[in-house]
Amino acid sequence: MQTEIPVHEALRIVRQHAKPIAETERVPLAAARGRVLAEDLAALCDHPDVANTAVDGYAVRAADTEGASRENPAVLRLVGESPAGRPFSGALGPGEAVAVYTGSPLPEGADAVVAVEDTRREGERVLVFKPASAKDIRPRGDDFKKGEVLLKKGDLLTPGRIGLAAAMGHAELPVVRRPRVGILSTGDEVVAPGEPLPHGGVYDSNSYAVAALVEAAGGEPVTLGRARDALPELKDQLAAGGDLDLLLTSGGVSMGEYDLVRRLLAEEGEIYFWKILQRPGHPPIFGRYRDTLVFGLPGNPVSAMVVFFLYGRPMLFAMLGRTDPPYRRIRVRTGDFFKGAKGKVAFRRAALFYRPDGGFVAKSAGNQSSGAIRTMATGHALVAVPPDRNLNPGDEAWAIPFDPEALGAPGLPEQF
Ligand code: AMP
Ligand code: MG
Image: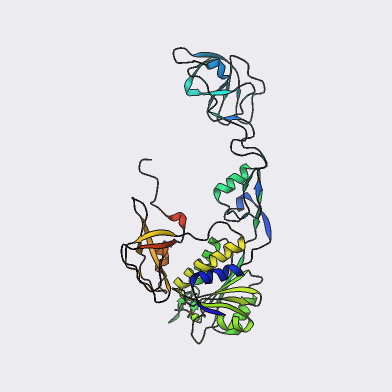
């Protein structure tokens, strides 16, 4: 067992033990958001499948409209229309025009379109005020061609990728089975929200916060409830979880007499490491209980969330074979004092403010005690304070946003 290991070493060890999940399943498009593609996906058709028009107007022969102007319009004969879904069945001859609408297939014989704004209809005649061009024609396969691989194994299925998969002709998508992640809170003092709070009791926030983080990382949380600080009870509750890819416990990993998770792993499994050189989140334990990987999160609510975010999330990404990074770092300027820790990296909760001239300022999200969960609601990011130093206002630092997509100033630019 290793102990007091640096952050990058802990990350290496958890990744090394997180085996990719081999089972896949097929889900309908409507249930695919947030899932991870299990195979490369090729287009089943060309898109568009025939050349079509990007504007409402008339399909014509370019040669018939050469030199056309307001003063000297080209006069064409309207021979039909080609609404989307009901293509014009004939072929367009010299001096003829076919009315088309955005997305209409281009009739045979036509090689250009003219927008309706540049024409006037007079009965069966169409006056064209401008030379028609091919620029408003979308050629067949303009977007993609049949057989092209557009989505890759390991891609997270975002709304844009789901739209693309649908356009490619797929009704169902092969996805990786979600990792089943058991979540168990330990502690005699821990009670479920909604119950009366006994003297000295604490509401179980870890189960819910961690379950939400598991879900956000693409896992399936399996709630195992709360275990008292007693080994036999803990084992019973674990047995109830069934097959799990990962078990997360909270509490019971520090030095206290009642700390059990450590004993559980030591007696019926293996400990890969215990304690990471960071704050908050110094005491986590990682190992296995029988055949199940176990990450023992600290009990303090901030520590539990920070440790899952930094180590549990990358583990789930590795199990899912996700190719997007579990988190990103951005360079920020500090707007407050951030206290460091001796021999440890300190991860302080910060709110990020976007500066109109570019970049971000990180302000403290509030009380930095590992028991003060409020900062997990007011903060957007962790600011990493290197070991043995503090950050002063105006210093540069790395920040890891909880949700990189939530960065930036809100809304559209003013001129829109
Ligand atoms: P422990 O790691 O068990 O020593 O717990 C550290 C601190 O976290 C104690 O103040 C606990 O009361 C608190 N704590 C433990 N488990 C939870 C939980 N599930 N939800 C909220 N706080 C907890
Ligand atoms: Mg405890």
